[in-house]
Length: 240
Image 1 (cartoon, rainbow, N blue to C red):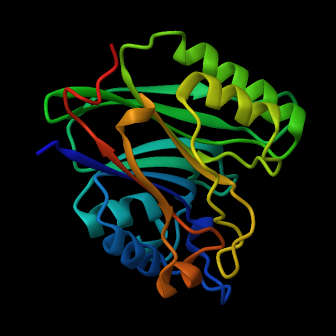
Image 2 (image 1 turned 180 degrees about the vertical axis):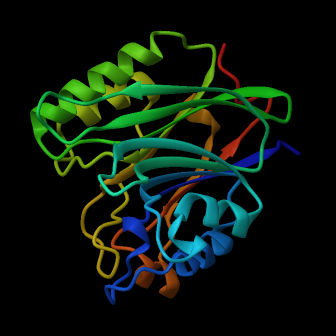
Image 3 (image 1 turned 90 degrees about the vertical axis):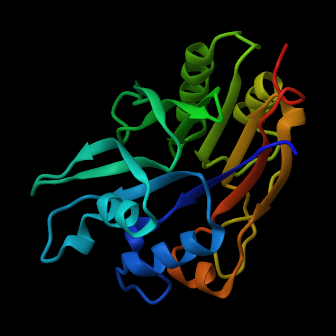
């Protein structure tokens, strides 16, 4: 049987749910439902607070038994960090940080991580792109430059792409490099209309399933639904 890798991308909205309450345990409960090997998170708040639960990345990693890799984009004035994170139960081979900040806009970045998946090196990129169309175009060009034209490696790109237009240039460019994947509505979580959260897998043949996780808990825990991709890792899915 071909080994499977489950990847999730989730904008956790600082663990603030539909009721306006900050509750990392609700996010942990949603992630337990999904049971992913690799989790790309956006809007992770590591601001010091009254309890350990406010240190969200560490809390979620401990709750799931995963390793945690921080990808902060903002340093809080009162202390602590905010940004992206990757949680995984697979061995980590290498970690790189990619600056995607566009002049005078909110700082943005990507985590670029190599993982050992059953003896296969798999590259996972986690990001959260900007709100303006021109900003996203610049950021996607930087990401594509970083990926280069190496078609022999397995690449997973996931995150909140913030692209509201299905025919926008950032999506077209990413489809051209990584293979077209369908847009699944994830925002707003209660009644999703917009496909803001995305997962690409190269080679495209390795992607077995792609869906939003729309459980009652997920509809309440954040303003985005998590995306799930099940990926085949084996000789039949490797590029080349």
